[in-house]
Length: 491
Image 1 (spheres, rainbow, N blue to C red):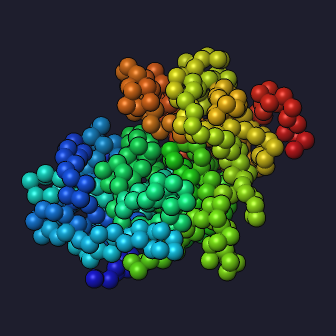
Image 2 (cartoon, one colour):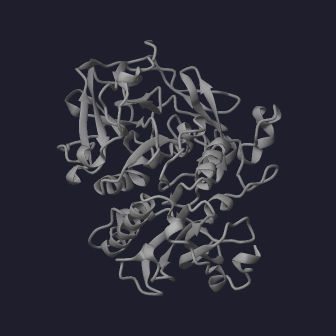
């Protein structure tokens, strides 16, 4: 297999991506998959989750067809097309690769496949990419996601792809971090690897549902954007230095302690943080290398953390951040904390005059059906919670018979950083809602879509201007909604 060359300075972009100019280029409306074909008709994976422009990566592809092609689409706005064709391969010979292998100790499933194609990214703009694999005559198609990461986030809004979470829910080969062959908890994987295709969303993992709609909106605004993955943030301590904001997208559950530390340092230096989902930074994981390279295995033993060989060697436990033996609830970073699953409930506005809701026309008590779900967060000052914190929505929910609330909240810190959290996992999905309620999208309707798009644009526009708290400090109102809470100054 060819080595991955380190690009020279000439290979790397000399200036940040011009998002507006990039999105003014012609889009490709035919990027979507139109023929799934059989499950094994064509599928593949990249040996890198991200590369810098000018670096190469290797694809490993298995197909029952005699030939196939690869088309690389950069995802964005492009006048509504949502993608631009950046590169297409020649016709390549197809090969059927071996069956999945499972590690007996961790029940980790991997594809021990040979290299199929080397992809050179010279000239590719940074961003989120879907490589579409087309079997001969397009009788079967699959995606392979890859991020062309930015060399710096300074002066830009950092989009962070949640690749560890995508992999945690990937059941390719029959097992993920939740269920295994018996479909029960005790047969689940204790580690999962990027050395296999994604079984879900036509090979795109969770990108299409939880990330692509927000990427399209942000690029349509022409914001100064930078791109990376959670693995990049964990590996590179200085990557977020000088970033205007960090964006956590719709489902960003699995973090390493290093990623959390680096995001917290950026926040405490004045970088804004926006969480457009729920259940963020909930599971503590560890990256390990595979035979293909570093950070290719996601380890998470959860409640069985004491059986983890890494923990026995003195590494942090791979369980929930809030749990013993090293409790560190995510609320200390985000202001909100994960509270439950599953729910479907209306989103109820409680602070309509807040600047983040400007232009929505929302009134106090106005609700948006089905917007809260399927997981949600709330403010809970029994856990570590920075103040001042402003609750914008206070939505009653019933979760497994327990009555409580989901909260959207805005927090500001001494550094001037602003932190916004939607409190619901359906936020990014709602960005796509237009017209009548769509049962295929949780019965979200166009009114809800317009509301979430307006609020999201307000967040992005403000957070792209620098530390939001210096201009718009939060006015603490937690005690209004949770009357037994001590005032902010008493915390």
